[in-house]
Amino acid sequence: MGNPSVKNGLMGAGVAIIIYLILWLIDPTSYLKFGSWIGLVIALFFMYRAAKEARDLNGGFIEFAELFKVTFIMIVIMTAITSFLLISCLILLIPI
Image 1 (spheres, rainbow, N blue to C red):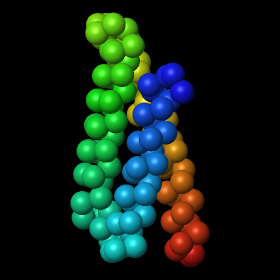
Image 2 (image 1 turned 120 degrees about the vertical axis):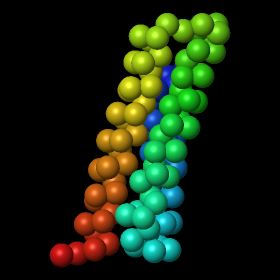
Image 3 (image 1 turned 135 degrees about the vertical axis):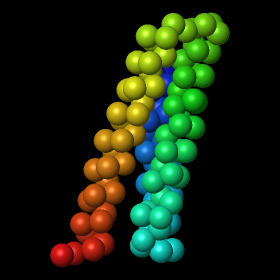
Image 4 (image 1 turned 60 degrees about the horizontal axis):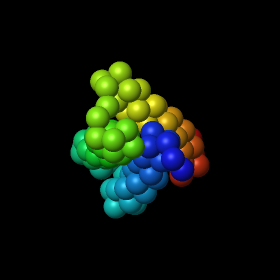
């Protein structure tokens, strides 16, 4: 995978889902207490990684518009996958 947006978006989603499920197994209310802050830290970390990889691929310099595009695409991919899978898991784990 050569695209830093896609690569870091998929890795960030995977890490976030694993951490969220571990937190849910420890205490189902942990997401309401501090889980959303953990998700923010994960997203910021993978945004930094995507931006750094894109800058390195461009020879050490990147324009703001390109940097914004890379991080925005990464966040959209991570949020879409994480939201879909977590909602699906919660529907399966907590039947109404």
